[in-house]
Length: 584
Image 1 (cartoon, one colour):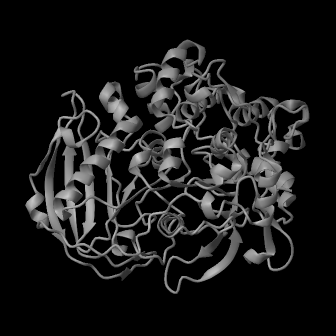
Image 2: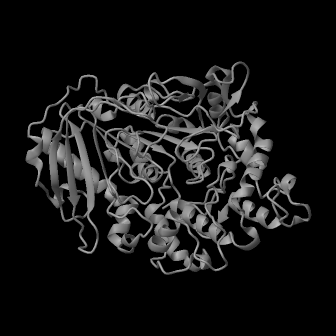
Image 3: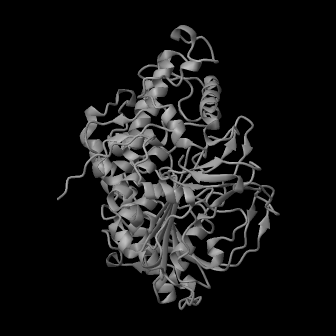
């Protein structure tokens, strides 16, 4: 068995071949002809009507044998036919029309009676197109995704991936389903994670169990199983999307992952260490964040050819602020003498904290899949706040108020909610960190089974996302290219970077806070790729679009495939044609 080795990675490195660089600059990437994987031709698939009345499914039992992973079976707790609903234009957003559909709620029973069940929901239109979309969760999960009619609408786990004027997938005939990942508490009191079965369900097993239960119900209702299957999710749901591509690839034809929290163990460990360091003189008060943000903009804004308050050249900016270099990127705003003399500068102690944030965390041992470090965080939007996540100033030895990352470490990794995370060290908990990494990190680059199926994967990350880390996703993609070669990866994967975007995909020009292009229809891109063999563009156009009719577009810009970025060339800066995707 070949030993997996750690990948050395810095954000300034672009380990990608000359041919790939050329194709990204010229906009001609991807295989063609015989090199393309087989697509699922659905053009002749008729809409199906149910063979069994919706309400008749209430109380139905799903045997354990119908679910590939261990359970005690499942039960349909309710099934009701929901009438069609017209479009409603509200004060802030539009609720699009919904078709008549069967809403099914179910519960998957655990093997361990002390573990919580997995609750799930399946919405399937009366006129079904024989396709399904499984929706990932968010945060620590604990609830069924809020809107299984639309991916991208209010309360749904994929923001910025669904235009405000697009019809809901349910209205297009897709069955939509998702679950709570095997616990019913979405707060940061994660007692459920102390149970091994619940913790494994959260990591990945609930995804497969929910999939199999939903497919069994589709077959019971329509007499046939789905012909095409998708998974789509953001944040924790994005990690789940990557997880199913790695663990359960035979179940999905197309996958969309936005802001994916892969490398999750290292992510929450780094957050914990960073929070514990923010005591005494190292703490950075919110009043200083505007000063830091202005300095980052001063050094990075024009690296993309245009000073517009949007950091487009994200790799060049990360390289400029590399804390491992001798030059100190924060020297220009260093307080005179190095002490804290006010909000218009940063002290030496605060610079140490900033460097810790941007530097890699090196574990000194291997995590799952050969990883051994957490890449440092990115830059941009510092003036918006929230990127350090610690307010007010914590006292020495106090338990950091960490929310989701702290709950994951305390309950999931350490299995000790009473432990004071200010005392946490990597060396003291190596075994538990390694165990958690194997369960929840979603960093396995062996997608050979997914590729063999002909699967297509679209990944989107944001350049100024501090709730996850785009550098981790870049490193994962680099690993795919190292493993399979650029040409093979191009046949199955599209990875896009949205510069200056936040965790939910929003982009603003700072300090004016004007909306910048951010809306793109990743769902249509995925379904067209899987079902029509339409290769996603190397530079799809994103737009700044109003949420209400007539959905006015105020600006457009290309969203480039990593490692390219949109460089301003000439012309109207509000038009996509004025930019080109380049790595130069």
